Amino acid sequence: MSNEPTDVGDASSAHTNAQLFGRGEAATLAFTYFTAGLAVSVLHVTQGTDPVVMVAAALIVNSATSTLAYAAVTASGGSTLAGVFSGWLVATRFGLFAAVLGPRLWPQAWRKALAAHLAFDPSVALANREATDDNARSVFVQAGLWLCVPWWTASVIGAFLADGLGDTQALGLDAVLPAMLVAIIWSQLNSRRGVAIAALAALIALVLVEFAPGGVPVLAAAAASLLVLRSTEATGVEAR
Amino acid sequence: MLTWFVVGALAVGVYGQRALGALVIDTGRVNERWRAVLQHVPLAIIAAVVVLQTFTSSREIELDARAVGVGAAALCAWRKLPMLITVLVAAIVTAGMRRLL
Image (cartoon, rainbow over all chains, first blue to last red; front, side, top):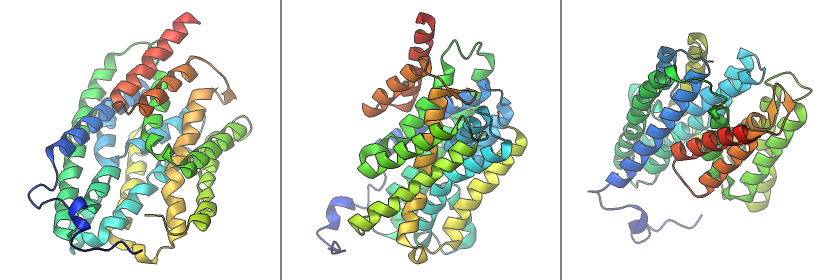
């Protein structure tokens, strides 16, 4: 922990105050979340979700991985409860992100509570790069909105567009959910640890699927994350 | 299929965790190693969902057109293509394979 040069070292990461959150970043976020919102919403509606419920899900759950995990678990025979529980489990990361950023947000509880809804992977990561708390807050809100507004808009469009689609199997739409999830986790597969966890989780799920009740294989696979305990012992303090 | 009940239950759990994180948890006091474990729970769950959705149907292991489609998606993800394109490729390849088989 010796990387704390205050003047020279920060120049590379902390850009000039004029340009906290660039147009490039805004456009990338907007495009990514717009397309993802469209795809997620079409998928849920073709699986029978009412378009109005879909829009509500986008706005108030505000987590595609949670609704997708629910859909996957219940589609493979899991109970509603198991589906909801796995939806909560994939959202643990948002709680952690919010906890990381929490001390840098405003002191007022109501503002923190409002901001918490915008805690997403990229918005927290971009905000955390900022050197001052003021800048971090500003970037967090901007990134959060550049991500959520296109996402919500696309969810509305997708929900009503999907209503008219026909035979979803012939269109290959049953491959859309796993494909989307592959895209979501791909960036985490760049370390040996990430690959090991994903592989063990996959193995647990496949071994259990024919014997355990629906939903159990997915929940049991969460245990693969315990592999982290082995590798942190070996590498020391590299966790951020 | 999402229902109002499910959306409500998911919203409570997801927002609850976000609010808990922002307002209550003091990160300095959470054990570093357990934080790392929690950070990887989503990866494990999602990986499990991917293989089940790709290689099983009605709780039986089954190799079909989906495996090819999801493989194509993995290639797209590796090339860092946008998610919409990745998803479209998966659907088109799966549909095409189904027609061939």
